[in-house]
Amino acid sequence: MSECCCTTGKHKDRTDEEVRRLTHRLSRIEGQIRGLKEMLQNDAYCIDILVQVSAATAALNSFSKELLATHIKTCVAENIRNGNNEVVDELVCVLQKLMK
Image (cartoon, rainbow, N blue to C red; front, top):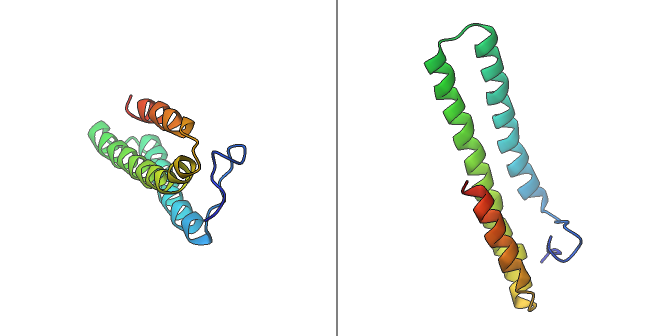
């Protein structure tokens, strides 16, 4: 298993597949944001823009869920196995931030 982000100075070695998958998601989100900007510049109807904002927000939330799941399965699990339970406090902290 690759080094955990919590034990290497906040660094995470990701597989090529993970980077590809997450980058693809971010590229789609980036396209959605560009689309929102165009809609605004083209005087699109407010509700239409808001619907697209909701879609972009859902896409970001989905990205966060995927990244969080991977973090728990790798970094958190590895740290707990190695006796570093401080990672649980870090996880609780980030979950509180995500749930605002």
